[in-house]
Image (cartoon, rainbow over all chains, first blue to last red; front, side, top):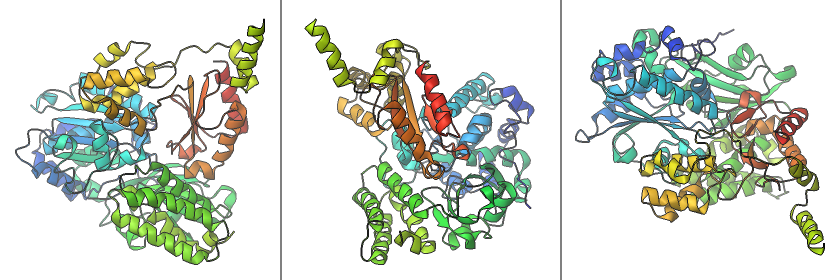
Length: 416
Length: 190
């Protein structure tokens, strides 16, 4: 029986998110105070040694990212920090929980990140439909300015940092870092060619650090309490905790912060109360639409970035959508593929044509094609081609749910 | 007399949903959408933003929120283009790309129904069908009196309480047939 380990979510439900005084009373802005007395590079080292990896889905080392950004283009006059708050992965709502319940936490993390790479300007790119998160963030930024945590000469340290809120307008694709930067500049959300990475050429062609809300929310604690404290959580290669958002056919759907390395079985039965009506577990879609299906054989696998990758699954954003016996994996897959078709921006031909074809072919699986096995194999092959020939993660994603569904639920996809 | 008769016939041809039309005549639709900008002139709104291209999305949001019919007019797009010294086509291109922006008039209340995998798993399709039935429109349309627009939304991030929808900036969760009816009838008389 595991328990939650609430680090990032420690204030959620315990403080008034609209009150900066509440946040200060809960040891808020202590990380920033300490950070401002440290050398920027030692903050980067601290985060790196703590083993923090990006919580947006890719799991890249946060410290390394910072190091790249702080070192690239020394002659550039301006560096930026961009907060990726454009949460849109189906089944994911961890960032919304942080932004609505503890907005100062991620703002504090952003200021520390900015100080560590010497950025004097930052943007929060927040999803347009998240009205409550927008309201909370707007208030939090204003309060932080009023108390001197943002603006000129923060807490008398001589460090200046301005933070501006920008709103998205309904595009899933803009959650991808380079596309987000395009959108931030006031353009259509089309992906850019990588490299250069944002660390070299980000927003307005300047070195830019792009981090997810959950990642940034972890930084104040690592700085305030030290890396040794943080190293006690998680596993060797995947340190710390992860917020999982669990939904679907469980008794207590919601958000749970657990140490890295917990299993799906623990998450579903220990924390989420088990299956509704104690029906048998059938499958889970992990990581959202751009994630992978798993069946009961994966229930006891430790959920870390590397272990799941080895087993052909993904941790992604931490979304877990649970299906019970009788639910249709085919319908879920069809929904995901329709979603990709709708959200494809059309820039890369393989993705534009491919997402449409995959939807059509999925429909054909139900319309009595003679050789369904060949069709299914062909779909997986096409999705693979899309993955290798599309610029951004959207074109690279359909293969994930498709291949994993075909792996565990072949007969269901072909039947009916 | 013939003209009046013709007019009534015309109304019923244009607005086949008589129930909704009847409601419209009783309850006038007035502007009361909560937004930080109130009912301001385009110039007043533009002046709130620095003339930088990266403010384009914020400007379009503000202009759209300020319009009682929740959309971006031709004039709004050209004014924004002029203000930011961009071509009108590039501003149009941006407005057209993002699904939250509309280039045609919408209702006072925009209903966004979530159709994500989770909501579909939790019977979200029935919610959409019920809304279409109750309002007499299909997703993408606006009721004749301009009260409701029905739209499909990708994951609204409310998965722990699916199925979900939003009406303007309010979220409604745990939807079932009874709750949908309650919410809609409340907004009908708002």
